[in-house]
Length: 152
Image 1 (cartoon, helix red, strand yellow):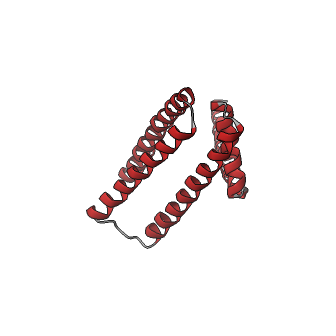
Image 2 (cartoon, rainbow, N blue to C red):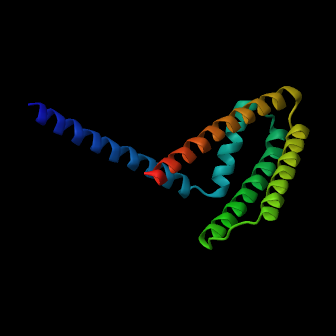
Image 3 (cartoon, rainbow, N blue to C red):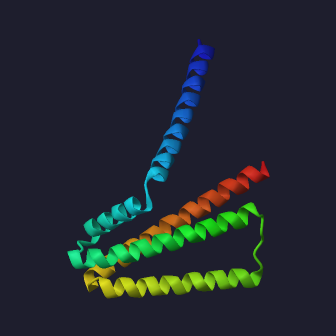
């Protein structure tokens, strides 16, 4: 009886695990099907709800979001090409890349400060910090998971 219960539990666990992975891949496919304009529009609407943007602010934010996402996609394509070519960055290249990234973040923050009023900017900054903390946790988790898989 115990063996049957164990076999059922094991089968059920494997089935649920496969379903969870399938759901993740479906979600990924759905996001891939959206065009850049659709993703930009959804991001703008989400920001409008969070920050209560006016129509004038929405127009300005649409341009900022579009520019930011196109830069991100170009950078991701460049990083993917480097990864496929197995190119290792030198210390000087890493410094230049990080320096450029920080300059772009400063520029983006200045644009946001110009577009948003003080209360909206404070709320945006709080949300931004919260996302950064969550992203850092995820990076740490993925790194620990990868390190664990390598050591096994």
